[in-house]
Length: 174
Ligand code: 5GP
Image: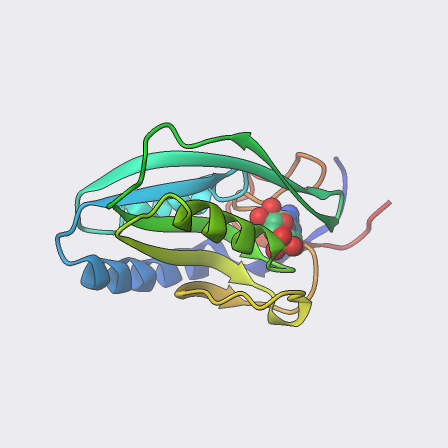
């Protein structure tokens, strides 16, 4: 892919915000055992960096969902990979890459809450408050951004750009 990507949030800025989030979450969980759920595919990079900054016992689960086509949300959430263990009576940390319309996060929250965890904490690296179509309250957010399409640090365009170490804005869509 040969699109022009303008740097938007640098790798250094991401890591420094993750240090803060790691401290907040370490403080919140205070030696509790936590099941950290990585929402695939977009949050894999954020997730792997974030859990290394949370100082408590963590077990890892992966939840695959797909809701996007190109650069707009379809509003329909499809589960591509379900959790492998029950989360009943567990403290759950749900790690999402970006909240845009809020539909995916609400779907995920309802799906986890229906499994009766002891608690559910949500964290998203990015939130686009102006794009919300349904109310969606998050416990922790990395960065609030304007309503523009971004790639990198796990986020893709047509499957590409997930490996960029920074978050960028796509300049020249075809
Ligand atoms: P929502 O259901 O909140 O509209 O969309 C959430 C999902 O859409 C995210 O998990 C992410 O995969 C994708 N998404 C939303 N906004 C963007 C964006 O700006 N860039 C990319 N690459 N994906 C996005």
